[in-house]
Image (cartoon, rainbow, N blue to C red):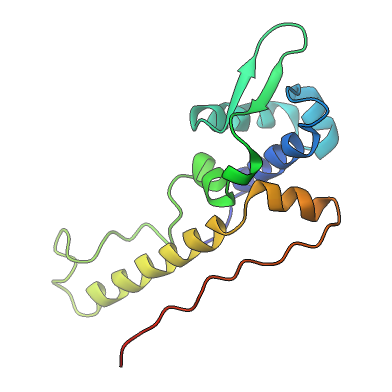
Length: 154
């Protein structure tokens, strides 16, 4: 899986919102663009997608802009990336046991592996919250959350 530019920009934009939320809960696209170096027109599109996913809401008028809809502890990188890029998966190959996927040699096995890889990527990005990114950006050490190894029967 490759995180797209949209996924990176969306993460940077929300990190900027989270970093400045204590002082200014609502922030303009212009301010976010100036701080992050992200192009304003593209940033506006990304923020609209994040709004559609329910991660931010907008306020109109004087002092308007964008605000996070929930605490940074409750927003994960997987939520941000999937909001702008769609489902996190290793590829668009389909699912095993569907649409004749198991009719051809090796296809079913590999589809299961690709699905498993996508699941691992999603879980890994679930392990990073916006709050942890804020702490790291401020130079505070954050203990990496490493998932417990899965136990496999032999």
